[in-house]
Image 1 (cartoon, helix red, strand yellow):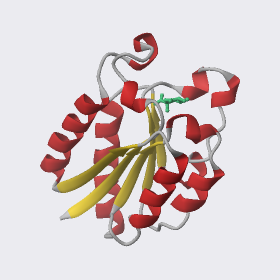
Image 2 (cartoon, protein in one colour; image 1 turned 135 degrees about the vertical axis):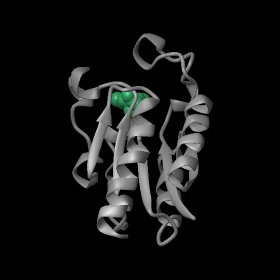
Image 3 (cartoon, helix red, strand yellow; image 1 turned 60 degrees about the vertical axis):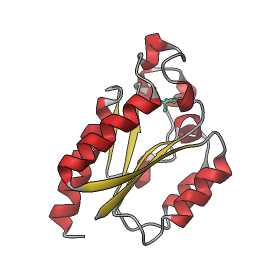
Image 4 (tube, protein in one colour; image 1 turned 90 degrees about the vertical axis):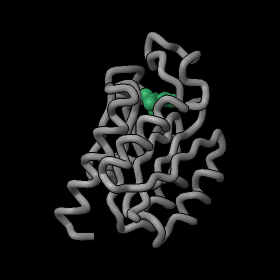
Length: 148
Ligand code: DQA
């Protein structure tokens, strides 16, 4: 079965209580459950993870080499700072999709830069947990079209 790695960065474990006016009321567990259900309908299995540590995210990206058909990543604040995550993602030839619950480009200036964006086939932002489902569908189309 095709496996998709879904990575979540720092503070996303606090969804539901964290600034709900920005991030909504869904928890990360809700998001994971929705992704599992949607992935099943697409014939994917998912490996859904969250870490508050940059190095752990880098290690997981390295460990996924040759094992996953695609990566969906919400690097959270590391989106705007992490060359280490950028470099690790560059190891992969599989499609990468950047997701965000909010719309960082409509927020503070320091959120306007993304070190993930240049490596991603698309960025889905501002759609809450539904953006992850859209990313899974987008990934499926990209994998089929490229016959990867
Ligand atoms: C976020 C946006 C980032 O700017 C922020 O640091 C996050 C969450 C989002 O999903 O909207 O932690 O990635």
